[in-house]
Image (cartoon, rainbow, N blue to C red):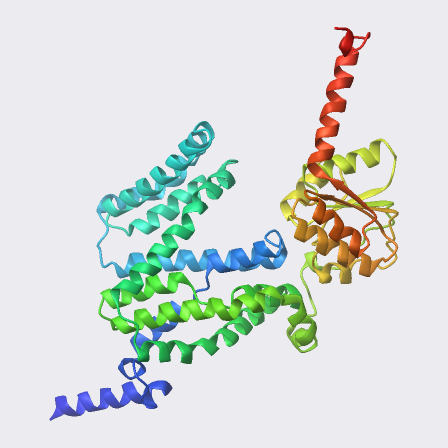
Amino acid sequence: STQSRSSAASDVYKRQGLLLGMLGLPLFRELDVKTALVLGFALSFSSTVFAAKAFEERAELATRHATAAIGILIMQDVIAVVFLTVSSGKVPAVWALALLLLPLMRPVMTLLLSRVGHGELLLLFGFVMTFAGYGLFDAAGLKGDLGAIAFGMLMASSPKADELAKVLFGFKDLFLVAFFLSIGLSEDVSGPAIGAAVLLLPFLFPKALGYYAILCAFRLRARPSFLAGLGLANFSEFGLIVGSVAVTSGWLSGEWLVAIAVLVALSFVVAAPLNAHPYLLFGRFGTRLKKLERQSLLAEDAPIDCGTPEAVVFGMGRLGIGAYDWLTKERNLAVIGVDSSAEKVATQCRDGRKVVFGDGTDPGFWERVDATMQPKLVYVATRDFRATKRIAERLLAFNPNAEITALVKHEDEAEELRAIGVRSVYDLYREAGTSFAEGSWEAMDKNHPTGPNQR
């Protein structure tokens, strides 16, 4: 009788502890506190693939809000890998402690990556290192996924890391589709699974607001906090991996895996239009959202004192540096550069150039700029047309009389910029070809005073 009373009390606790279970909804009735926590943990992740694509579509990958969001996503991925390692139930081998010496291999990994070349050999090297890390950690009794991420971190400091990432990312979508397909083949889609996904979908919005509140608490301005939170307003494929482990361990039924898969897909459908028009949404709700903004902001969000420059260059890559140096050395103009990469800003300042940190596509940047800044010339030297157009639009709203010169790659892009008021547009490849021909001709003239045709 004592055992039966204990079982009954446990059943009451199980049903009363969870609201949706109390309502008698399918799938939710089987949840207790432990399994509900596992489910909540799976749904706490946001999709790195979706967020990166959303920021890339808006040409904002180097902006403050994008780097904040991706930083959160990286930590989520690390936590997920740790969870997978712990949940495997394996006891690490004694020599697993030797893996703590792996950071000593970083110079070797960097050297190998620099010598491996490009193309197919680089791709093969990336796969070999991934499987090597997986196999090494698996042999030590640890989760192989942790080894793959550890080897990736060892190569991250290499100058060729970005090139390797781009080569490997081409397979990312393929593996992701295969993963979703395997989930779909494992269980049949049922009414309870779809119903559970639909019931959990509205939790996207408090999730996004939660990230917004956290970033505001860390003294980020309201606008970048909102944009970052919006990028994280989705459920992740990593949640599916956690759900798969939970199903394999017997914590959740197989129907929950289908429900999570449907939920992830629905979250992408809902989040896509929201991330397509983030500035419109902030313009509508910004007044209310700014109530959470801290009065003491970060130093990077302080008002920008640009002085009284005669020319401004947006985008301090190689093109921007060339324009900056020519304006200062050949025309003796007071020039200031603007770039959304803090690393580039620090490098350019060390080289003696006056460059400020800012994102010209963000209206918040123009709110921080002194309204008395009225440069004669503005050069937009970004290679992404979407960013170029947004910077031009923001700049013309700030200073309608600005003389803007912008780079494009196609004629239709030039027409779009002229339509919004850009005075001067240069075709990047055509101008590069012209400069290439002129430079070679001048070089031949110097070597052969009678002219290249008289050689």
